[in-house]
Each structure stands twice: as structure tokens, then as C-alpha cells.
Length: 190
Image 1: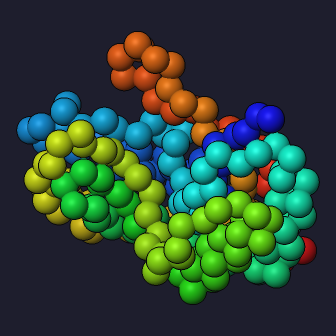
Image 2: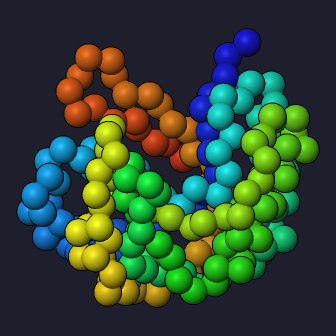
């Protein structure tokens, strides 16, 4: 039986990603930036629920439950906002706008996966974040978060719940990153 590595997410639209890409330009000039593994633009997303490896036989029920979760949650305003870090290992951009709706959608996606029979970690308080870079060793990310502190991205409407497959990087290729592919997407509130 085969499985797929999946997660539920909200993806920023192209204009919001363009704006973030421009804001990140100066961060690449900060000393030590070359030692970070910067997330490729195609990997920018707000993860709602990480499902891990999901057996293909569970997919039809998962699709039905995620569609229901999407339909029960209306579209909401969102924007990429400021930055933060997890320990000294991950740099991220935050979110502003309809955060209550975003958290509710995350809870519903998590519950949909759990009810499908996917073993899920205990659901913690959701911190909306879009991962920008990672470090293999603890690193002082303060200069990067300080550079992002005033970033206020354009407002956009989150109108879709996406189920994304993560394809692992090719072994032995320097700088290779996971490739993300939207498997299915459901409109919110319809």
C-alpha cells in the first residue's frame, strides 16, 4: 500500500508572494545569510495541519472531510505580516487579519484528518507562520526578525483550503528542496 506525505494549508496569492520576495531581498545581505537554507518561493504556505504519510486508501474520506471543513469556514482577510523565529532554527513571516478564522480552519483540518483515521499529534495552539529559512545549527536570527519587523503585506482574501503533497528532495543534490504539489483545493464557505 502506498502513501503520500501531506499537509493542509492556505497559500498566499502571487502578488502577496511578490511583495514578500522583494522584502526578503535585503535579508540575503545580512552576514550569515548564506548559511541559512532559504525556503523556495514555491514552498511558501501557512500550514494548517501536518498529516504526515497518509495511506492512499484513506484519501477519499479525507477529501470529503476537508471539503466539509472548507465549506463550514467562510473566506477571510489575511496578509503576510512581520516576522518571527522558532528557537534559532527557523525564520518565518507571520499573519494578520482574520486570525480567528485561520485558527478555526486549522482546527477543522486537524479534526478532519483525525476523524479519517490519520494519527495526528496533539493539537497545540496554532501559530500562523510561513517558513522563510531554516538553520541546521542554532543561529541568532534576531537581525532577520528585526529586518522583517515593520513588514506589512497587502491584504488578500483567503478563499481556499489546499491539500498539499510534499515530495522529498532528491538525494545527493546540493541545495535541493522538497517540492510541493497541490493535490486538491476546496473553496471556503461554499
